Length: 76
Image (cartoon, rainbow, N blue to C red):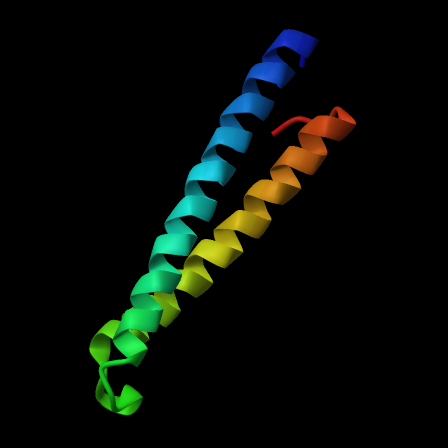
């Protein structure tokens, strides 16, 4: 992969990472708001926020790996 294409991909993945990190902040705020509603065992909003935050965290780690690989000169 040529340097220009690698740089374009790197920028795209870094932008994706930034957006996902912002999304995670919003999810965590929703989780906090849902936690204040009371009984967490029956709180669907809280459960969904936990699942969404875990999904976002996994995706963030995947993207960070792609970025590391691109920075080392790999192809992704």
